[in-house]
Image (cartoon, rainbow, N blue to C red):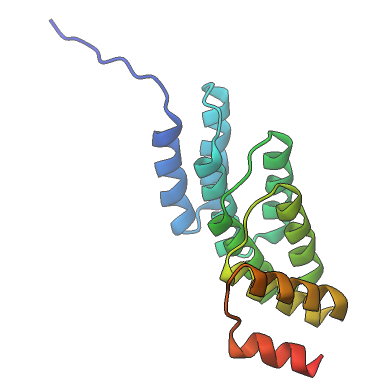
Length: 160
């Protein structure tokens, strides 16, 4: 007698597959797996959503990343700081400073606690778009949080 094992879909298993596809740039396959996960009744969590966001960011798929991020927010999912950092850094590398600042504002709205890296990226984008007051206010907030700015951050602010 052969017994068949039953399988109940798990967000963990899907997330592992999403990560594997995301690491090698198979974004279309990752998107298909994400849709399959939804169809199977697995509700995505912060980890699954963050995995997709990081895959988009890693491969420079910023439009898709921002669209997916909007959908994630609509579902009430808030990615962790590390995912925000990955997104912000990717946007900044492509000189998409307005997008950096929009994501930053949404991050603040969602009460996500920034870290040293987050502040550094955001201050740089404020400087690049000429928002001196916001750059200095964020710099002061960074200091109040106990983070020591890098030389590059000081240089940006001095040049401003």
